[in-house]
Length: 301
Image (cartoon, rainbow, N blue to C red; front, side, top):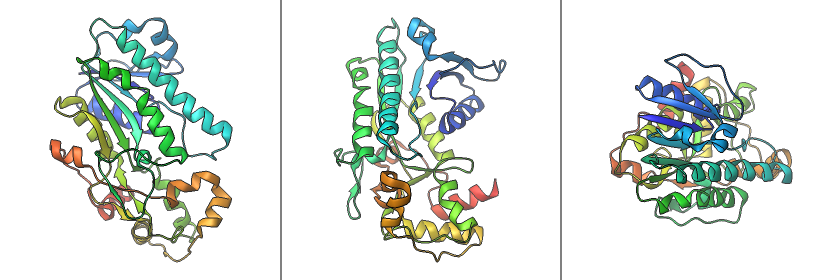
């Protein structure tokens, strides 16, 4: 397949590009800035300006993945939240309009989203049939992000997948380095109550699931990108501490986290128990379904 990736220069985008190329696919990375070509074995690069002026540059693509959006790993000031929303909605609308302008559109459009769309709960279990909910910023942002791609559903020849991504565990980036840091400093422990659910996914499983959705025409609609075995924050912390040989002993009250991180503290104090029902029903197999092995794998690399 020939696949264009909006946001291909970010952490997930780079890992997905590597996986797709290794699998024999041709990749186009859509970026804000032109990049040096990587040769015949690497991705080709197009800029958002080029796509805007000439949508036919995507004419021969079989699939499009939209990962574009500024990072949520920053203090959520009003300015930062406005940029998170603008970057997601504008890129989604631009790609949607480009696809609609093509005489032969791609067969599949995979739109990134987040499990935050369900809102937070310590008791509910969410699958793809669960309605979006929550008045918090992550939930409302995800609802708007998905809605920006809904015009694709009006094109029967294009399959739309909405990938709702959980907490990504990766060695270089994602949430894992942030969770691991306190343990390296001998200050790791329970965050808030510790009872909040952490629905996580190993970066390798995430990129594999993206490839699975691109190449399996029977899967569409919302897809929860999360391990089938969510854990509480306290459990996850104990696994990280035990794996890196550091104690899990220093509890951090939720009020202190909110003082330090502001509204962004909701990412680790809110919690959602999300299950990947659609992926499992479609036959996807997780390589790292359990957090103990997933963390060990990250520490081996």
